[in-house]
Image (cartoon, rainbow, N blue to C red; front, top):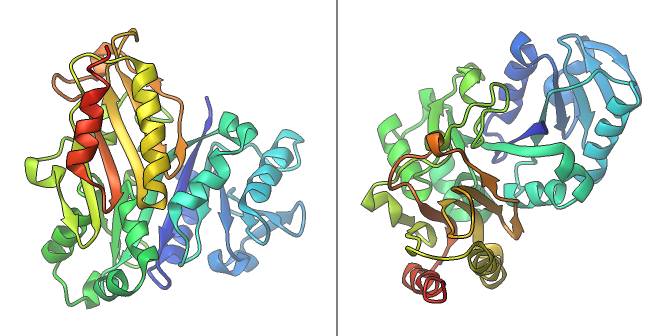
Length: 327
């Protein structure tokens, strides 16, 4: 089984470092590897056990820490190579911290578009720390902050104790941007860490299928939610279509939408496949489909969800309907 990859993102000062410290201290995640921006971010000076190089260190908790002072792909490759050579302990989870001005979709694409790394790692989820005090202004001024929310599988609200927005108001604002993401309050880095991980279509530890968690059902209002130019679009699949036609349609949408399209998630059932498939795309990258067992699928859950900016829902639905005409 491939190693689950989690992306921890959030705008400058949102509290990513505090959250990472909580993860590092937890015995549950002692076999994790972290790729961070600076060693000082997780305070390794007093927790350092040994250094296998000037860029990879083993913490007292058992976590492996690697600095991102080069290309991300190089950093992940270096960790994987040192693990294979036995220079560092085996890790069962990779956590990558982005910079405050990064776009998570680009971070994911840089790792998963490398064939050797795509064979070793699978995306588990994007965790976005939301600064409740400043998020409203950040969304107005910085497209990166909006991208971080739109790309999230799970949103963590920090600084709620000093925010002007109530939890209900913040939750409603985030739901208009990304209704498919789950939400949680984090207080000074403390939260239920079990909610952060194992967010893929299949639980990365138990192997259990969790389709409803990965792609929750959206209400009619959520399925056409939008905030400014950001939107979530839910599309209905034709009654009959072939996987090759749908695959070509997905690729064409990614090509035409470009940077405006951030995430694709869907449960589809092409005529020529033995069962339902889970499809997942990030930015320009389309992951291989995952065949789902019948028991994991609830009736009427076949749909595609696209998250991005300025998406034309009517045109998308019409073009998707067209692939059913040739089946």
